[in-house]
Figure (cartoon, rainbow, N blue to C red):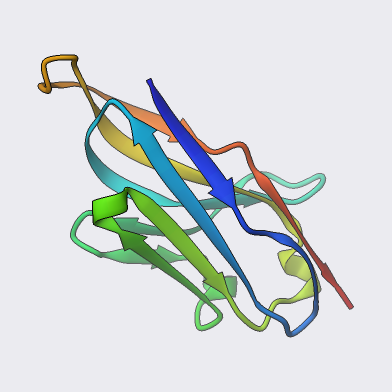
Length: 125
């Protein structure tokens, strides 16, 4: 089993900054992609940013130049640095990991995707 635990988030004024962290633990053989989705009330969940194991990044157009995704590969952790926050960035943010799980004998077992518990980001005007 694998767990993703998020930290960070909260309330910030428009123009401010926040940093999210998400650590993956458990029976992990390797992680291909880690990243962040968000879901605002009444809207579909959307991909905000992601980073592959080769450090290739992908961003939602509306956050380019303001958000930065990074990973600490040794710690199986992904970060999201959010600057110049806007009211429209208000949402619940979920981290995710697309990974290969590991057997009890340290062999690769299956490809899975796991989600964090979600953290609320509220940007006030």
